[in-house]
Amino acid sequence: MFTIDNKAKKFTFILMAIGLVSLIFGFVTDYLHYQEDPKYHFTTWPAILFNTYFYLGIALFAVFFVALQYVAEAGWSIVLKRVPEAIMGALPAFSIIMLIIAVTAILHLWGNHIYHWLADGITDPKNVKGAEGAKYPYYDEIIAGKEAYLNAPFFIIRTIIYLIGWIYFAKKLRSLSILEDKLGGTSIHSKAVRSSAWFMVFFAVTGSMAAWDWIMSIDTHWFSTLFGWYVFAEWCAIGFTTVYLVTLYLKNKGYLEHVNNSHIHDLGKFIFAFSLVWTYMWFSQFMLIWYAHIPEEVAYYVDRIDVKNYRFLFWFSMSINFLFPIILLMSRDAKRNHKRLVFVSAVILIGHWLNSYLLVTPGTLKTHGHIGFTEIGIGLGFAGLLIYLTLNSLTKQPLEPKNHPFLDESKHLHT
Image 1 (cartoon, rainbow, N blue to C red):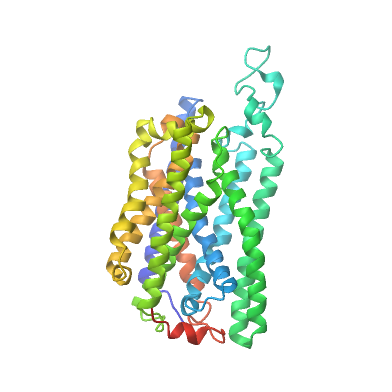
Image 2 (cartoon, rainbow, N blue to C red):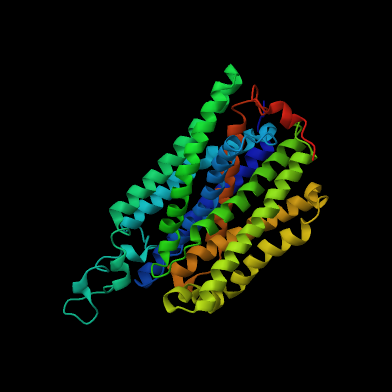
């Protein structure tokens, strides 16, 4: 059985303490600035949102990873399946944070004004600019045209459905995995395959819808038919990277004795592949919109390229997320080089964290956004929370599954 050593506990608690301090600092700073200027743009809520999007995506990907192995009848990953099962144990915590963001947004609490389409009067034709009694924000015809979908009750209902559904399937797959250890046979495995298939259908719809609701709707006039796939590719890139890092950590601690270089190689291939898939999605979305130059579409990129606060990060995050994997992980030997994989994994996580920042901040803070103590501190705090919940989950069950029909195949994997 895995046990958390004191050094790891102390490390996670320090990270979470940094997160708590930065959260308090952010809210206090926002409040003081607001007292001086009622038009002040609150920075803490966007920081919480993009960090939640990032870490919730990692936890949700872990559910997808486990389900994918079942529906694909994959054997290679069985000896390390406890790793994604542990990571998805963090899903309820980040789901609660996302729900808090959604509720405070629709109730306009504590300066949470992330979603412009929730503003009072913005879909009321009587609130046209220049009309008697009209108040800012004025009537927006485009937002009004989306009111059937973008409205507070439907928004919160969808959010609850996404989160409850994802948590249900995570709990279901975890319980079936534990039950299989105790009972053996193929009937439990068959139930897990069926549950995984249902999750895939549910996730295919809700994953994209959540991306539209929580992220794309920030820039309400803008839309992209690729956005759901774009977010999925990002979650896969950071998800496979996290699974690899946790697997390597356990391996270095003397656990997961049957994980060999072939398993690491396969994880490296997925990290490499989805880094390229994400880049393809990024370029396809950017190139088509920028080339077409339709005002309501291209404005999204204008806000990120023409604004000095974001211009460097926009090109930098894309470059490191593409160039480091393609240059350093191209060869077979590179995917078996632990030091190189750890370095590239760290770069990928930082690069996609910056991209998550760019998905949220320009649309909420416009030209006032910047990366500071609050943004970084909350990110570190959430990292500590994810690590702690993952390690704590690993202590609950033996790290090597028993009675899985493909376990022997996984133990003797050689590629």
